[in-house]
Length: 197
Image 1 (cartoon, rainbow, N blue to C red):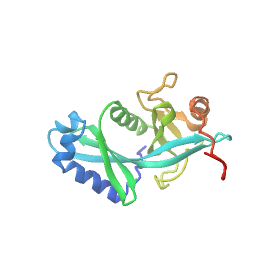
Image 2: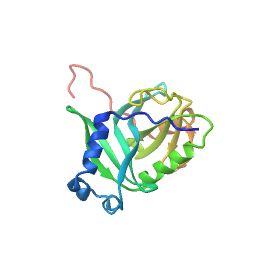
Image 3: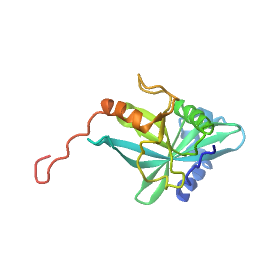
């Protein structure tokens, strides 16, 4: 089934196109594959990047939008990615990067296209485990910038995955979340109003 890629904010895409058109931005990036790409490079597959801040006592994930990531394609494969972030002035280019997550994201997206159900692809970062997953959201018409993983959504850990968690294998959120709950460090307690921090 086709993936329903959510539209990125227009300013985020413009900022990436501007950076790709800037010889300085490309030259200064730590991305040899991008610098040496032959022919045109294009930003594709914008994915909202959500961060798992914590898991509540009821086992519900609390997430927030951290940015949008674009795969940078040259020829028939991605050579790098571009990250954007929200600033007080709106969406802005953050940086280019390459490495295993670019390759594993592209691989996971190809695998997801073979599933029988349609999904909206997103990325979910789990900073406490240094883990990144492809989050396949079941509501294809949802705003990609908001929402939390539903129990029936799929998470595909991207390689390299933490020890004991299989990379490139889809897991239902309801199955993987209990495993993450045991591994994600608890959030520090919030100080009470009026008490010393």
